[in-house]
Image (tube, rainbow, N blue to C red; front, top):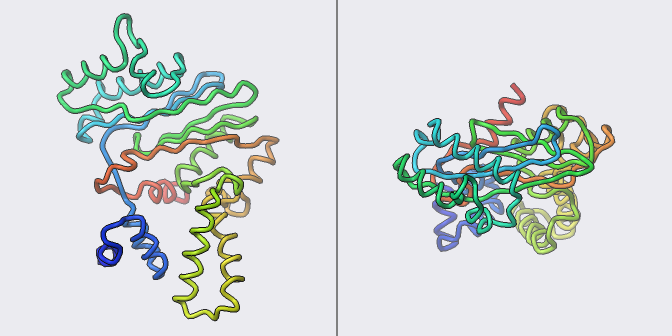
Amino acid sequence: MDCKKALAATEGDMYKAIDFLREKGLATAAKKAGRIAAEGLVVSYVSEDHKVGVIVEVNCETDFVAKTENFQELVAGIAAHVAKSNPADMDALNASEIEEGKTVAALITESIAKIGESISLRRFDRYEAAEGMVAAYIHGGGKIGVLVSMTAGTEELGHDVAMHIAAANPGYLNREQVPTAELEHEKAVLTEQARNEGKPENIIEKMVIGRIQKYYKEVCLVDQEFVKDPDQTVGKLVAAAGAAVTEFTRFQLGEGIEKKQEDFAAEVMSQIKG
């Protein structure tokens, strides 16, 4: 009902509704308002030397098909092909030859006829770490996938960092990556939130500064508390191993497609803490 009221107050604009909920202190409702999903799989591929890594999302209509051997082999084959062919973008990937005389686009079309459902090759990312390493983590049988590149480190460290990203869902690597416009928007929301709490104007600015520091710890990977050891940040964990995270990608199945789903990030967190 909180979500419904927020949407009504913002004329159906979902993003403004989320801000509305946050300003009113309804953080839980705001999270529910952003839930999205689709069927299919997120799959990763990492070379044996951990120098090349790929993450791919392919969507289908039903969870039943996503669990079939044919569909899983299709997605895994595309991920391995991306690692080998290094396509520049989706158009290049679809046009590339995955089998003799057969493009990826043709293979997808063939699979649609064979499987009997609409199939969409949605997105991919590929990292190559000549001097460092690449690691991946897949949660929930393909519901969330993470690919991370580091300057150094071990397979275990890479797995732990990727698993943390799956659970904590950071928006940025560090504070420098947070866009100025987004930061100003956050300050405006926090200022209004403080006013709605009845705080006097002369202390609101100080409160906002403090809450912005908390905001950084929520959205920046290196500032986040490591899920397996909250006494240290991810940045300190990686630095202790003489490494640094250079980039990461997190795909959540069906992101941006408005269908009901479970809160997979919370599920990952509960499994780690359990």
